[in-house]
View 1 (spheres, each protein chain N blue to C red):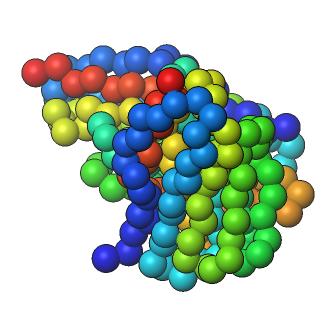
View 2 (view 1 turned 180 degrees about the vertical axis):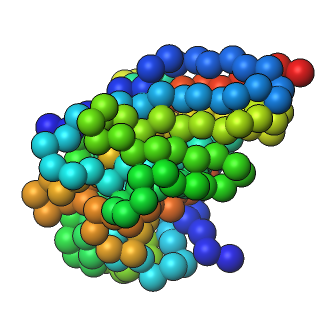
Length: 115
Length: 114
């Protein structure tokens, strides 16, 4: 079974500081990896995804993530945090579970941005 | 506008009273899925549908039913709701069941079962 671990259920940064949200996965086959963001009272929105090709993936709102196979990691970064980045972030891995396209989510990391 | 629409957004009800949460997408997506989100547990899949009339269980299907009679609609049915089904529910859809396709999510339905 595949799994996703997000280190740190809550990360707090100052406005303008680097954002680093950690995600590690376990997979017996090449994974497809996603980061989703959830703003209060809203559904999940896709930030970025890794499928194949370049291991550094750029997403919306200045976020990027790097797929590191040797470390089984897919950490999310943003050079300079903005107040509007405050939200909950979910890392997810997809895999073929029989006939099911299944997304397995991490437990989420709540990002707060302090002025 | 491309979207996944869930109704109701909020519902408080009592144990045993049957309820249905509707989900509709306007993107002609083949794949649809229901998740529940609980604090500290992330999102867990309840049921999914690869296409019309094709549904199957996810990780936590107990106490839920679904149907897919039309491509755009995928209702979630709680025949006899219980307090442990109090949760935030999300419907999602994607073009196909391919595992490199991102899913599009609705805004969620918050259910409270008393």
